[in-house]
Length: 375
Ligand SMILES: NC(=O)c1ccc[n+]([C@@H]2O[C@H](COP(=O)([O-])OP(=O)(O)OC[C@H]3O[C@@H](n4cnc5c(N)ncnc54)[C@H](O)[C@@H]3O)[C@@H](O)[C@H]2O)c1
Ligand SMILES: [Zn+2]
Image (cartoon, rainbow, N blue to C red; front, side, top):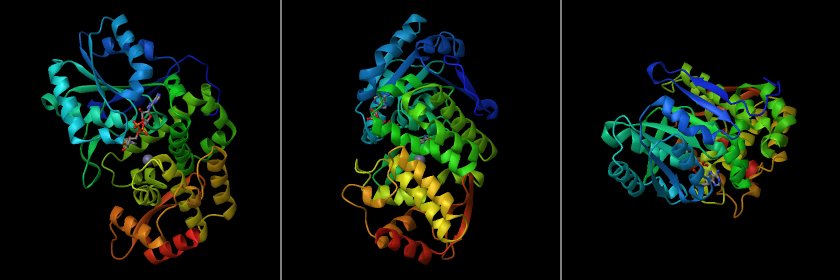
């Protein structure tokens, strides 16, 4: 796992889901090969590229040129950048534009963007003509490591995030790590929280490798491809073993119960990005585990030290404008997670790389812990 990889050789991570199996192709500078890949995936297919204004400004021309060089005919559908495009209005616009572009059952939708575009375009693809195949070309680190596996697509409703959606597996995922060079640093760092998560939840050797190699991941060396591949493989393994999200898959929520409460407490605003909330949430999950005597204070401090080293927040006081108090956070945790027989479920840790599902967490203990942390 820690062997250096030759630059320029794409890594292929297969996602084994029977008839819905597909490949994730990861490599630096592989976007120009997109047309050829699409041609061998579906000869004669026409393509609708869905993207957002921010991504399109940097990468749409290259994607279109890649398709044109392989004689693949394409249309473009552009929506504003940001979470607000995971809306009914944007969904309607994208669906109708796909129909206008005369994309038929044998054609393809290409999602060119981060997680927002992947979710929006994937959901539109799942609905138009009762289901079109789609290809994801992920342009954010978060999407490359997190949206590449699992098949979740969807939009937000007034009541909450991701409440309208479908499972729709892509036919192919292309993760060109060079596209991340234009991603704002803060977005890259936020995506890195999910990378660290895979080490912290189940792979101590990967975590140790990240401690040594994170600078190269950020700088765009071959460590970046390697890290993304490790995350995709880890998620693919977990999802293949637990497609219905009944057991092991819950481990992917490490840091997300605390994280979601903090995100919601900040009104899902720019004050706290999802990955930043996950970073804080993971630190809290480690500290809470240490408080319960499940792990050593040294392990908890080591996890936090790495998160801090890359520039992610580890103290709630680092959130500009602050976060709500313990009572408000407990209310948000209660909304996120159903309280079963007076107990909460959390992903806790026994060591770095050894997360487990704990169904028997006393809400009073969490409240006391949060009160201490916020003091
Ligand atoms: N389907 C899944 O399994 C899954 C998993 C995790 C997250 N998500 C969803 O993903 C969304 C978050 O994804 P995200 O963080 O990628 O957000 P995003 O798609 O909004 O991208 C973040 C910002 O970066 C810009 N951007 C993206 N790539 C760029 C590039 N290469 N160069 C310059 N700018 C670029 C975008 O325009 C946007 O402004 C959330 O809606 C979340 O619910 C889905
Ligand atoms: Zn997440």
